[in-house]
Length: 371
Image (tube, rainbow, N blue to C red; front, side, top):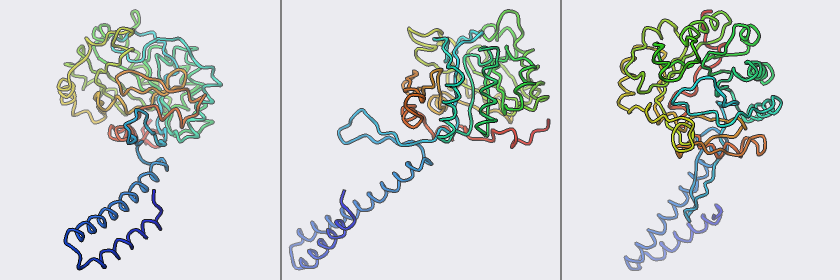
C-alpha cells in the first residue's frame, strides 16, 4: 500500500498536469479528472479500512471475515471477546428428550484442575458470564464437580455471572446449602405443564414427576437467593399449549422459549442419537405460540435463526463448536492452542448475540430481587 507521502506526491503531480493541460484536448482533461477522482476514492477507502481494522483489533466490534482476491476458502478471523460462554462439560444425561441437540456421544469429563485452567484462560480473555450445561450437569459426581466449578468461578475468578441449565431431576437442597451463594442463575428445562406431554417428549425418568421437581426447585432458589429461570423447547407436542398461568405462578426472572432446532450428527442424520425431525415446527407455528404468550413479560423468544450461531459453546474437551453448517464442527481445545486461536473457528455471530438479548442483567447482585 502507498504511504501517505507517496499518495500526496501523486496528487500534486496530477494537479500540475491538469494546470498545464488547460489548453489540451477535452479528452485529455477528462482523463486527468477521472484519475484525480480515483485517487481521492483510494485515499478515503484506505482510511476507512484502517478505522475498521483498528476497531476489530480492539475487540469491541463483531468478528469480521475478509475473503482474499483469489477467493480462497480460508478466512481471516479477527479478535473477539468471549463475553458469555456455555460450557457443556458432560454429555451424559438421565433424560431422553427426543429433540436433544447435545447428546451422549461420549462419557468424557475433564479432570477438575484442567477444567479450572480452561476457565481461567477464558476469564483472562474477557469472559464475564459462564453457563454450565450438559447433558445433565448435576449427574457427574452427584453435582459436587459442578458445585466446585461454580464456586471457583465466583470466588476465585470473580465472574459477574455464573449460571447453570439443568433438567432439575438430580438437584437436592443440600447442594444449595453448600454452593447456592456462588450461583447467580439456575435455569430448569420444562417443555410442558402436562405430565403426559413431558412423557411423550422424553423429559422424564421413571415415575418421577418433572413438574413437582420444578416447583420445589423454584422454592429453593427463593430460599437460597438464586435467580430462577425456565427454558422451554417448543415442538410438535407442546406448540398448542397455553403455559401462561403456570409461568406467571412460578414467576421466573426469564422464560427462554426456543424453537426446536435440528443439528446434524446430534438429533438428525445417520450418525445421530436422536431423531428430532418429528418434533420440528414451522416458523409460523412458533410465532403463533409466541403470540399466545405475549402477555408474559419475562418471555425471551429464540427462533432457529437467532439461536444457531449466537452462542459460544464449549464441548467436554473445551473446544468451541461451529454450528454454521447445521452441524457441530469443533475447533482445537483452548487448553492446547489458547482462547484467541480456538475462538476464531467458533462461527460466533456477535451481532446476533446482541440482537437476541444475550447481554442482560445477569448478576443476581444487580437484579434487585425480593428474596
